[in-house]
Image 1: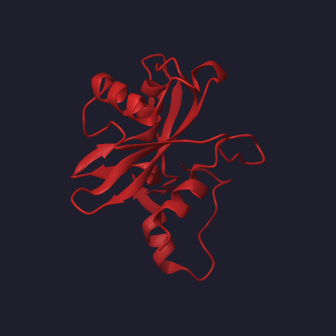
Image 2: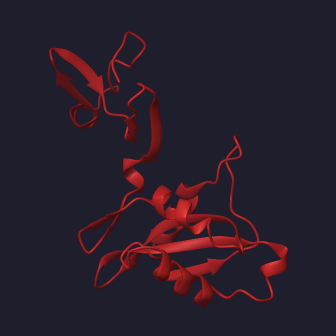
Length: 155
């Protein structure tokens, strides 16, 4: 983004400034890390965050895309996708899901993995699914994927 309201830079952090700002056509732009597109009518859509990308054996997996597909599973109430360490692939896709009450007794993590493999490319499908009672939320009621991601990669 570019404009007078954009911060001038990070205080005493030249390395952060070098990676966060670029010059295009003589203007200084801040790289926000948001990924999106503009449709043919000129509307902008934010669809994901660059930092959320999961790299599975060199293939890029965008959690927002996988989540959108997974909401097609009739048992899933809510879901969040994070990366998990994988000794062979580098990273793998992991799903944390809450289930609808009616599906709790009849749906297993293996059922969800099998469904996902039939609904999307195999590298995008979660290799593991954890059923949880609830997902952590931010003060604005968004799922706190960062908390889950940080906990997954802590030694």
